[in-house]
Image 1 (cartoon, helix red, strand yellow):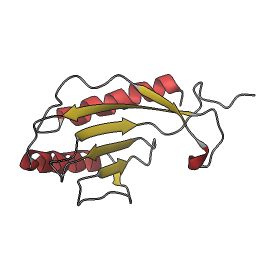
Image 2 (spheres, one colour):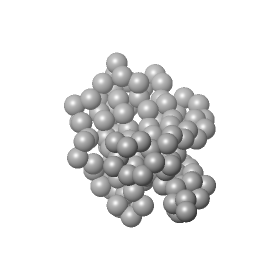
Image 3 (cartoon, one colour):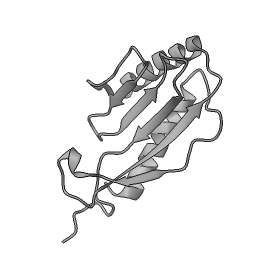
Image 4 (cartoon, helix red, strand yellow):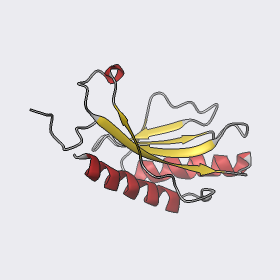
Length: 133
């Protein structure tokens, strides 16, 4: 997968997820962010990740809980699996699609004092799809 293909996939997932949540973000989702993957993910340098985020404001705890339930239900239906580092106490819900390794995170669903946001993140990949020669 190239970085451009990953952006299209991330954008498609984000659009679909937001359409299936009972609440909407405060504004249009943020533009794409990109970051070089570091050695912590145990892979070669030069690969990149891309992601988009969406923030929700003025969301009381019951709305956040309903959004987290809808998030899990929708993504499970799309083949995503709950990631082991999910933390239900603070509402950190992390799901990964094993087919393409796209990760979707809903953060702050269980704590009204935390920023409530969603991120959809690509795996680490070579910008042009293949490692440099």
